[in-house]
Image (cartoon, rainbow, N blue to C red; front, side, top):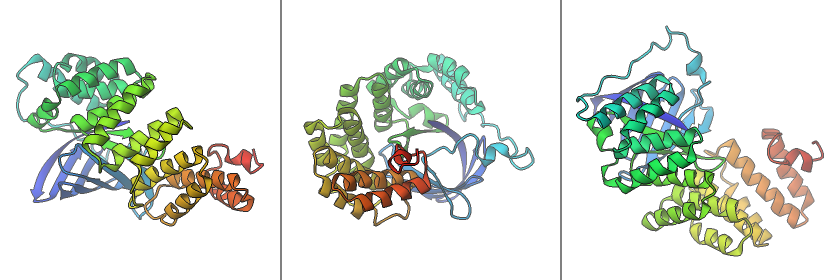
Length: 350
């Protein structure tokens, strides 16, 4: 999980210069789609306006694709730059003064978090929890540090006051977004509103083994946002990873993934879980055919996702006694990541 705080200066309609701890960057775009050009490369964010959920991919300069998700790792190239290459840019002071002790704690909390001291930031944000935005930020920070019970409490409170989410971040002119792992292959960028809080709350519930509550929260999101592929993917992943071969869970995954086209990396990941459900139900040929169709599109797909798709197709081929096809898939996975699952053992190399 990564945090992004920045101030932005508007130059022209759709063009902004972003000032952050890692340096300056240029954003092009507007509501629904933004391309950010910074020292780490090109980051593209796409989302539906007003939803609070967006999807981010990262490419290094020269076209090499980075990891999926919002915040690059701390040991990236930007962390190794000299002071001359990336001068420190302080987070500007809020455009208005805090009016209450809770607002003051929220401002101090995100400023400390911007400095990189997460433990001190969480301590400060504990005083900002009466604010919905304070509860959101304290919740996701507690979640990152494995304080799952605390995180669930904060996020539940933020959800109760969802009408106020984002209010104080807008007041003080700060954008706070969080990269949140959705599956092993994909990461989403969430924002302080009800949808983002609910996705973070599901992560806390799962960590606490409160899977039924997590599933029900996601079902509520799916009902309110039936076309949101990320929400559907989150539910499918939870159902498959928690209830495995349970037929009711598998049938729900099939309903959640029904009618999905292979339009993006997130659609492909949802189809992967559809194939997993088919495999659990013994529909091996159907799973193999589906995975073959998904693998016809590899452009824009992360190496992790392609490994997952090929590994699952290898299992389907093994179940259908197609040994040579299974081995071909396993060898491609091994060539990309020799440590993936038990691929080395299946190839007799582990």
